[in-house]
Image (cartoon, rainbow, N blue to C red):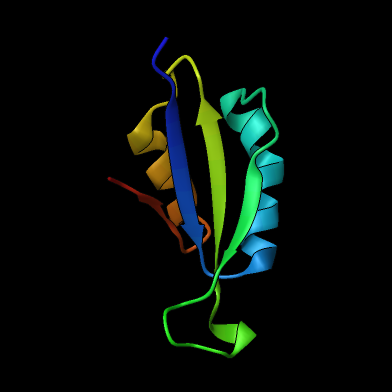
Length: 81
């Protein structure tokens, strides 16, 4: 079974937490999304950190376009490989 990992990039922690809380209801995500602080290269100021919401999709059933549109509601985007 080929799973997929989706990474949503959000502008701040509050947005990332809201997205992580809304994902199970909106998309039926079974696993708890993982929040990761992503400091921008060369930046020491915590205010310049982006937050990532990592969603494991073991059945590869989530729609990437829908996830991207969802992230955009929070001024974020879906990271693509």
